[in-house]
Image 1 (cartoon, rainbow, N blue to C red):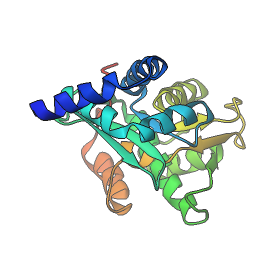
Image 2 (image 1 turned 180 degrees about the vertical axis):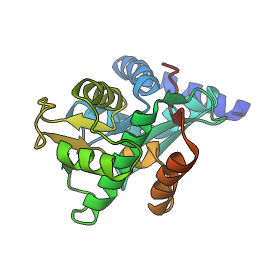
Image 3 (image 1 turned 60 degrees about the horizontal axis):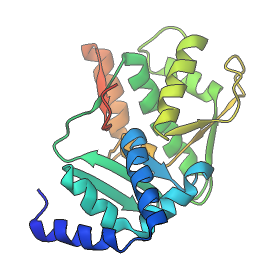
Length: 214
């Protein structure tokens, strides 16, 4: 838990903010609680990303009061919020979990071809192909379910839908580096191991880090 000295430091830093920055601080705190992940690769989040990076100690101390850890990685250009006790995690259905692991695999594949400064863009066809390769399902994800899953992960700033034609295999999806924190692993083979476990043991739901319960 946060110490009294840190709480006092937060108060001292906060009261020194200009009124406009205090309003910004409040708005961004609520935004981070809602989306969990920010990246400067997302145009609408760029200003908020840099505001947090400029006042990181202030934000980090504030979230410690809520027993949360705010991580800032300048290399990945990601800000991520985690509950320190691991509570308030988001339950996922089978296909959502498979999809999440698949885009993590595709992100890793693409990063071997590009640098961290480049956007990682995939096509729906690649998702469908990986999905069938798992052997967990014998058919593609339906258009309706695909749209729902993409919308859910877009909300958490894990992906961006660049083309909204879900019937077109060439429609593009941008994967943000935030996926590295939603599916945090040390070795990409762990993703394959997890998919293999699903296949052997059956599966009902998975969890990813989220301080929202819906």
